Length: 389
Ligand SMILES: NC(=O)c1ccc[n+]([C@@H]2O[C@H](COP(=O)([O-])OP(=O)(O)OC[C@H]3O[C@@H](n4cnc5c(N)ncnc54)[C@H](O)[C@@H]3O)[C@@H](O)[C@H]2O)c1
Image 1 (cartoon, protein in one colour):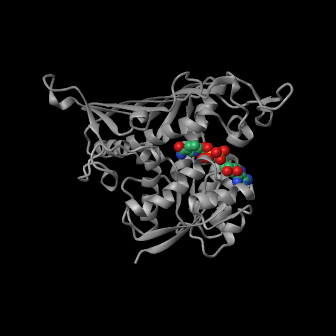
Image 2 (image 1 turned 180 degrees about the vertical axis):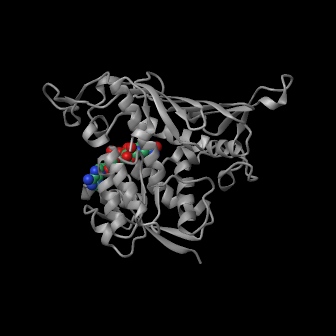
Image 3 (image 1 turned 180 degrees about the horizontal axis):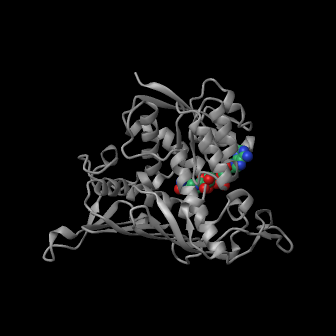
């Protein structure tokens, strides 16, 4: 009989929906030693919480997130709130003896991220996880395996871009445009995923940021409460970056470029990474997430060329795919979260994940790189990671 895993979720909007779906689907598609129980969802608005709990299968809602730390029934607390409260919530839950799964970026600031990492290190029996969900797209997990098999040989270059189009000045002043809530803009939101994917795939740390540009193009935005209201719109200050580009080196010498923007007009969720090595290259684009492109340079000029691998084999050839639908009955955004929920349950059951999961220590290393890039942009100088603690 699988044991129950009692879960509470904090935050019930975008990520709240993605995580609720993952926790409720995971035992339907994966055979696991534990069965997830959706116990409590916490948020700020009791009426909204009641509707959300009913719709997504949570037993109850609470507006008192702190009470979750004291609830002896709960095993795992899942945090899907804005970046400014990740540290306070995660640390309180760790102090309450819970395992914690927190959304990315680990935090809005480096001191918050460090405090989270330190709180986790003090409690090695309690597990921490960070929802860098793109690691669990079958194509990215396959890329990880191919690199581990040595198919690229020495890695020379990583080229990562995450381009979104948030629609310009008419988009209201959400928390995501305010430094006090978000920490940074496109950088912490999108470059965080790229840095995590690059570190994960290459398997080395970034040791230096050589230069960066951080730019805010739109510094005033309409307040959300003013949208559709009568009279002149009230505006507030957007004090985060809209775009950040930077160059970096990995410990083994590979060069890397990262580019994140929310103002790439016409690009919706263009999250892509290309890795070039001595004996091969790999390329992934999230908008075609079921595919991995692979160039095998060992085949010789007669046969070499980019091949498109459909990462949906039900025979176990591709990570996670056998748990889903027949070949080429393609996966979408939500499946990365379900795959991650499966790996979290595996780890909490004492098993290995299909590919490594990021914990607070791992996500702290990503946060250091993000901070190094912002310092580099501000100082117009290179930054060695050994100086970012
Ligand atoms: N992994 C991904 O691909 C991905 C995608 C989007 C967002 N995120 C991350 O997920 C987190 C949430 O983003 P979102 O898009 O879901 O935001 P959102 O604005 O849609 O939802 C945030 C939720 O947090 C709740 N919240 C905020 N402060 C709270 C508090 N003090 N007490 C209780 N509830 C509180 C809000 O009420 C809301 O329900 C962020 O860290 C973001 O970076 C990750």
